[in-house]
Image (cartoon, rainbow, N blue to C red; front, top):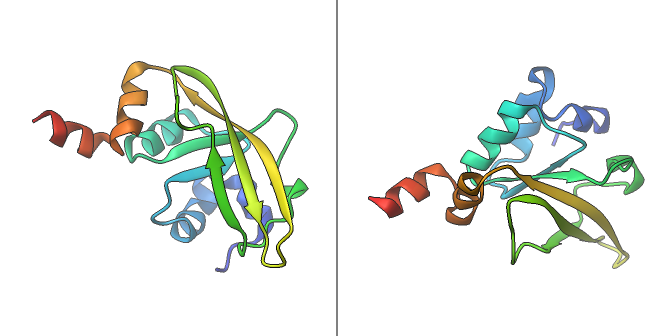
Length: 127
């Protein structure tokens, strides 16, 4: 995949965005410590969940290798504000771990975009 672990904390910066975005193509969620305002808004517009680690937590605590099976919980009843989301990992050896994440939605419009899978599906369904 060609992305060094140290670059994962730079997800939303210009310097490493290209490589990380190529690796994460066709994903429905992104996880980072924080997001630049415009980048967060763009992710929501594309129907991608901009998930953040809980305060004081980061990717280094979980030893990600890219071989894990991931699942998310807590997405059934999203609301405007801060939503708690669980990230559950199963490694190839069968070991499991979980992380507490946050999904911040600032408006009903952001919530609507995510529910429809992004701005384009939202607009198409309203036409």
